Length: 186
Image (cartoon, rainbow, N blue to C red; front, top):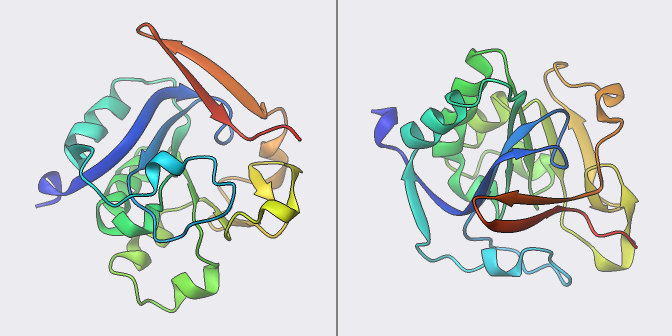
């Protein structure tokens, strides 16, 4: 049953405008097989239990914020939890909202199908940003940290023209906690 699927989160934000078009719920998963030099989220790399929630719990959070335009998955590495994120993404799209997902894998690696759940997650991603962060290619690119990373508009529900006016960085005060999100300004 899908409500029993578990996600191991590093953290999440109920509302952000720096992680895709419009106001989005942002989910950072815990654990990443990559060790990119200059990683912006080094605390999310270790595969360890951190904040375990069910897909159903996260879905309830999403539904409780009606002004959201969608959800964004980052990490860690989202495709390390592709089965559960695929189910959440399916639900988000089923109510007419969009899904943005970052990954260190190249799209060709994902389409090779060696990762469990990759097909369902890819099927329900509207905008995929792929590729490892390469510090030597860092720059100020829309929704990307380095020049090698590519944007894939997989569904047509998000288009390149939707990616204007996305703030590069954002500081959010939520219940007494100050959170930084976005991309460094070089």
